[in-house]
Length: 165
Image 1 (tube, rainbow, N blue to C red):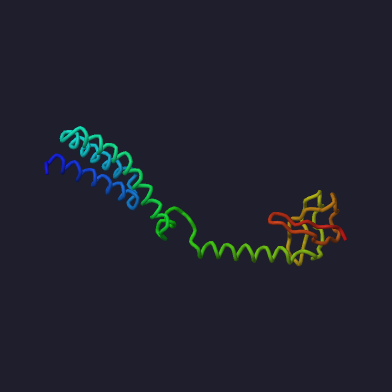
Image 2 (cartoon, rainbow, N blue to C red):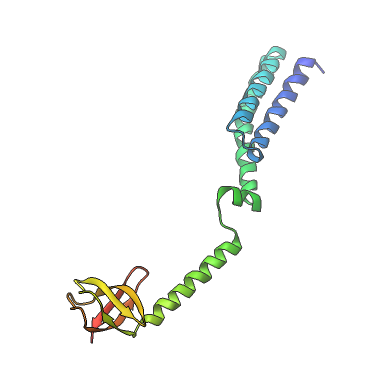
């Protein structure tokens, strides 16, 4: 085997391996630049061996290098380390968040029907006292004066709606 052909192929394979390494070892592009330089050197050697091998190597590099990068990146994103590095929450974190949101929804739903006292005029938003807690509330029907008794009629994530009793 001719040394130019052998080294050209070895350098192209090395460039593809360097691209794969970039997925696992983030280097701000240094490994990718090295891979590009190695690929160019391999393609030059293939052209020096034969023009057909040179074009074949160039075409292979243009197709294989991005394909290898994205293929390995997709594989890596399926791993626990990849998801953690990209900030994707784990299944345990997703489940914990879901349970917390469910508990908050139950707590909000439990507020419906509670009676309280208006501390500041509701025009239509103000502060009411419900079971000893100060809560921002929205009057269902316009204005409610301070000191009036109210009842919680609806609770959303961001607001508590009250109606005067």
